[in-house]
Image (cartoon, rainbow, N blue to C red; front, side):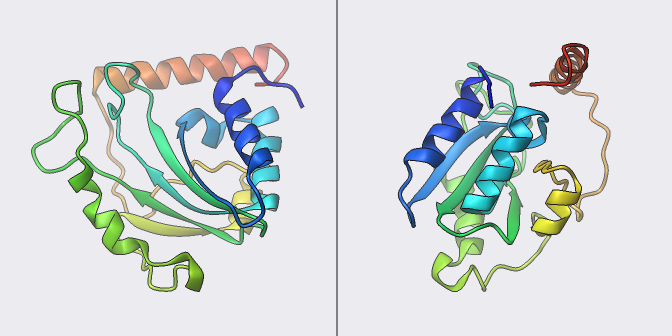
Amino acid sequence: MRTKETADLFLVLIKHILKVNGRAALVLPDGTLFGEGVKTRIKEQLLNECNLHTIVRLPNGVFAPYTGIKTNLLFFTKGTPTQHIWYYEHRYPAGVKNYNKTKPIRIEEFDAEKAWWGTEADGFASRVENERAWRVNLDQIKAAGYNLDQKNPHAVDTVSHDPEQLLADYARLQGEAQGLRDGGMS
């Protein structure tokens, strides 16, 4: 398994050095969720060796001006395989269209996630699906080729005409096309 992408290397390293029953939370770009080739094998190993119990989908601009790439928070515990993954879509607060250096994301914006979270000891039994949260079984993830980019089934499809989003989508598609031209390996 070979990759030069730092996010992939970081995920493999953390998974490797984490002790059994050790917990981790990582910030990773969207490309890690849907990437193929080596990324697929990395995700398969992660799901077999760890319980990837939660992915928080962050909106654009959380790390602006350093990057405009959409990011995710992945929470996992090493030692038991994943059975299902909970997703939580963190949305902009009312009146906010994007984050930037002078108006960054604030810790108070995570109050909804904190209230929803529950406890790992009981398998997050208190979690319920809602307009921001949904659960995906491992069989569905496997059937999708270990694609962790699972869309919110409760969200209404909206077309974004935001230039930054369109450029990011274009860059992602260009990267995928280049990967196919290079032999399908990421």
